[in-house]
Image 1 (cartoon, rainbow, N blue to C red):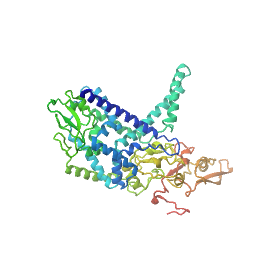
Image 2 (spheres, one colour):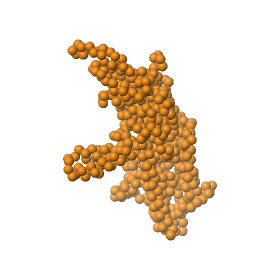
Image 3 (cartoon, rainbow, N blue to C red):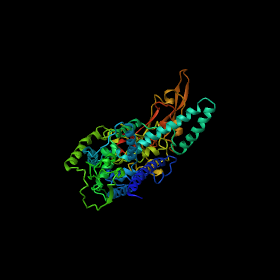
Image 4 (tube, rainbow, N blue to C red):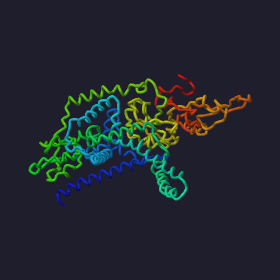
Length: 542
């Protein structure tokens, strides 16, 4: 096989590998199927365990390193040898940007051809340094922009629910269509799809997430930016790319140019995904190279190739990104200036507790929780009732998209501990079933102006019937009421025992009121926070 054919074959192999890893990513997402309270699949957290950004920032912000995250050192090791091949061959979000860029090139009449390195590409390093400075003071917000976290969160809260809605609505429309041959044909297509996806893909029917519109908007904007520059996110903003770029400063695998045959036609720069060349010729910045092999594939003279070189050997064709110490210090100062913005709300400062901020069982104290939580969405995806939702404003800006329980949408299953088992940073501590039973995440309270036995003098026992606590946290006291005819009758009026209520929310979820339940759960009395417990055991009140 000629060298030219090997080069072309190598680029095609890269595209095939990208496709395989993208399919693996979606397969990994489907592993998060809340089928039972049993232990999740052992590979459930694999994607995040290979993310060195989560490892480093959890260590800096929380001064803790979950041992399983040490697997991410494998990615750093590969980067030291081969450069940023993770970005060019493995990263699923990078693959999506690659496809989007190709699509925009086809749509645009005059797509940009020569696209060399720009100092604006240093932005991602400034972002990394700025958020690293914030992490020193316990703010773990960088992982909101981690590409693996971002894409998983988008897939979980936007793409899958959107696909689920399309499948369920099309099946419902086919079922309600006029009887006849067309309906039979439609049902023959939609029903098998509906049954299969319901049993093996979606599991939780009609699952939807609050704030999904904002998550979708961020994702769409990042895709549209590819119309301006190919792989805009990867070049200018990606913090994981910046981190790997630091380790790819002088890799063993390097690009070389045969000066005798190169005519500086700049075809390689036209196809470079990372804009790793500052000018025509043999100059090359390994920290920006994604290892896509487009440069070697596009060279008609076979002048471009990759070879191995010792890391201490500095080659005249290899250039650094020239990130000055002054600029890095400026980025760190910028991060410290932005730090107060994360803690402007009373909730973020611990002055007040938001009643709707009901954290999942096993969640650490709020400050420690935010030091670890990456807002990845693993716990939300695995919740069997769909009750865990991304926070929007309830936890302040620092807690954006972190998990909270919304009982109206789904309750906390009494015997389920999946969310505590899947958290990659242990922001939610692993709990056994018995310990989970003793963990309080909130407290239920009745609105007597809406509760049927109180407001209307009629029997209703739905909340008590569904309470999962063995001794029943909801009990009844008989009371005499007078109806409009002056007749006296006895009605059982429900009450909450604060010593037994764990705040699971099943009572609020099952309340006959579909708009605003007559019994609602707030974050009060949560086990994780002693300052948010107004009711002491035995009935005493602060």
